[in-house]
Length: 93
Image 1 (spheres, rainbow, N blue to C red):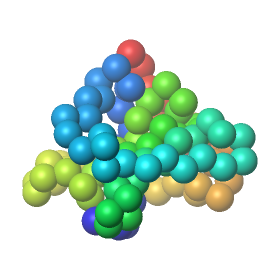
Image 2 (cartoon, rainbow, N blue to C red):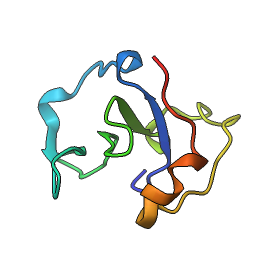
Image 3 (tube, rainbow, N blue to C red):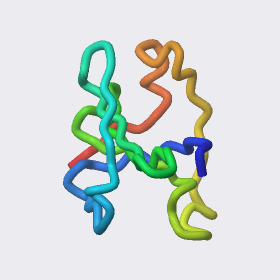
């Protein structure tokens, strides 16, 4: 579960059902990205990405089994995301 497989969804479609009290938030540099992780085990289940500040990047590896079995995966150069953002779909509300 610690390997992050991004599934970006509109923030309006995201609901955290439980465990909010167990989360810590980490921000760095610009402060736009908000990385949420469990303060007990360190799993990073979702965050607000700098590339999509109106969305939530859910770690698909944290979803119940089979939830992503039909999902397509697009390779993405995160080190140079500004030049590669066109490779992923934009979020639409």
